[in-house]
Image (cartoon, one colour):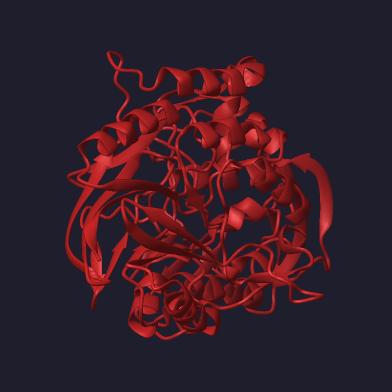
Length: 482
């Protein structure tokens, strides 16, 4: 069979259904531009459909219903109407789809107008599949098999309620058999893996698993101006927040790809062309109950607050400074999150805070030794930079303030931290230090933690009432490669 198929992909939109700021880099310096919005995405997708030589399928590679205030307050329900309206036809759940727990996710999946697939999520008790492993579509005279795989970090590094009652298998334990079975039973012209596993892992999957023509990836927010090609497998990923779409035009012949064209398309805000009117109305209606709450001004910044760098970021420097201010701790820790649209110089709103840390966890304090803090940082560096891609967890390095580290990233696991300082002097392995954190951050599960009664967003509000993040001089580097 021969024919043409166009794949349209979005990934890691993190509930940014309306336009927002996005981060860019020019000559090593960050800048921001207005991007995204599901109305613009739908208009661009419709334009692609009109230009395509054959059928089109619009795919979402996960992390779509978590990441903003309205999403958090409604357990993802505020996002569903826009996700249905934007034109997505098949989706894999991202790790943050489980952020409201499995029961809430099941309810959200029932509300979607398209299938959600994942081949590696089962009931921990019965082994029954939580999702269909694949979706086979007949489009434009072609048989296309979509197979789903999601990240197992849900029940490894995330809070236990996220994946309660579920078990997440490793990709290499399920995909070879799943792909072989789909090819044997369905005889597809094309096999597309919709992945929320991360680009390094997707490259490893392509090397290890036969029979995958295309991988539409997510989780690591990689912005691929050109696809990564491994053997005969084409891998694409589209950044985050719905700021870009991938268009992949495929020429199919005799059960394989014989030619392709790839375009990474910026979803730019355009006052003269607001996008699809119907989707714009859906988005407006979904956000209307929250507009006033989101628009409240809570502070001001003189610098771009963002999470676009691997070792530390201005956004998390402010977050950890707020934690220390609320607790008086010597050290404050936060997660190595990648999500969160940048905040430009100027007013900071409540909506900015809720997309900076939507889970709004309660702060706690604890006492950790210098040796424990070093081990924690070594573990985080290994999760970010492990030579084995399947040991990487998809996030950046843990963020901290009050502590300074010199690291050698190319050293082996457990030997990357060269020097660790707290309060300007070298940390003593046996000495205990007061540490503040929130959520799942910490060297121990719950042992020795003292809850503070202060939520992360309240801590940020109090910090911003006293401080205005400036040009960077007030945020000294905390982790330095040497």
